[in-house]
Amino acid sequence: MNTPWSFASAGEIIFGTGTLARLGPLCSDRCWHRALLVSDANLAAAGVLDRACEVLKSSSIEVCTFTETEREPTVELAAAAIAAGTSFAPDVVIGLGGGSNIDLAKVVAAVLACGGEVGDYFGFDRLPRPTLPLVCMPTTGGTGSEVSHSAVLTDVAAEMKVSMQSRFLRPSVALIDPALAVSCPRQVTAESGIDALVHAIEAFTAIDAAEMPPGNAYSGRTPLTDALAEQAISLVGKYLVRAVEVADDLEAREGMATAALLAGMAFSNAGVAVVHALEYPLGGALHCSHGGGNGMLLPFVMRFNLQVRQETFARIAMLLGEQTTDFAPEDAAERAIVAVENLRGRIGIPGSIRQLGGRKNQLAAFAEKAFAVKRLMQVNPRPVTLADLKAILRSAF
Ligand SMILES: NC(=O)c1ccc[n+]([C@@H]2O[C@H](COP(=O)([O-])OP(=O)(O)OC[C@H]3O[C@@H](n4cnc5c(N)ncnc54)[C@H](O)[C@@H]3O)[C@@H](O)[C@H]2O)c1
Ligand SMILES: [Zn+2]
Image 1 (cartoon, rainbow, N blue to C red):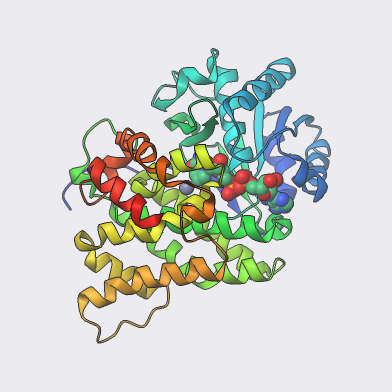
Image 2: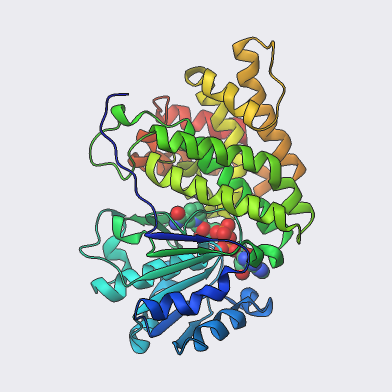
């Protein structure tokens, strides 16, 4: 490929079991003395929030906690968190939790630095200046938000996910302590974990960087995103079922934390595509989790893309542990879809829109809303029409 490309991630990545202890020193070393810690009641109940507060306080950091965060946070909740942040005036914002808490922390850090309201910044490249410094600590093993340049909220009235992408949303530090996920519930581990697989597969099958129209939030696939996505797929194949089945299997938690990180680095550069576009209205209307919706949709979108990414699909099958030697190319590619369907079944992710509570008369509106998210449509390897989206949704119903 003879196309210029670039790559971005969090400013620094600190990874390893026990690294929570570094949170205090890393803040004081950077002269951050007032920390707004965005988390939620479940992390508090699991004792994770207290441990984070303790390590901060032992480094003489003043801490204010915002623990009202809910799953798939709404625009209204973001306004409440911003109000809490404004009165405390932090010099660092820490997101501790799954993608929901991390995204809320990002949005707060953005609005505290840039002023205005959260709605002013939806879309790509709308933040005029850097956010407050951000430290993001994932506790689920899936979203990769700790390194990504996006933050996702739910617009309740529009029944749609809304998001912002900006180079300034990449956290200053991603602090990844895989042991924090030991208390993560089984279903969240499954849903968040399959989201990492969706990120990796959508990045690995994205259009090439050379074909990406200018002005997109994503660059298309590059040799670096391919390398990251391949490794992430293989780690999900090896560790997701184990992490779901045995909560305190630390090796599996480390494997999934790594998979989520690598997939996050891959997708936040190469891009995500039709799976994510369809999940925006689906999640907005059915209130399923992001990972649950994505995991349900993945095999149906893969089937749509199969004809233009046969070789890549064969590679995905292999990375997921499928035996494809001596298979004809189309049969090897098909095994990738079968592998994803099997994995989805083993970890209890629903296999249809109906199972998520959707109705047939909602499908046309889902397709129209998804089709409007052009930046995601442009990443998809096979050109997509509105009729194609409707057909994919019918097959997934
Ligand atoms: N910004 C990005 O790049 C990006 C990427 C993917 C997804 N997302 C967003 O992330 C969100 C989904 O994040 P998620 O899958 O990590 O789940 P989540 O953050 O929604 O968490 C799900 C539930 O699990 C609980 N939980 C999480 N970790 C726990 C732990 N260790 N112990 C006990 N309980 C725990 C939480 O309290 C919450 O109730 C969605 O809003 C999605 O849109 C963002
Ligand atoms: Zn996702």
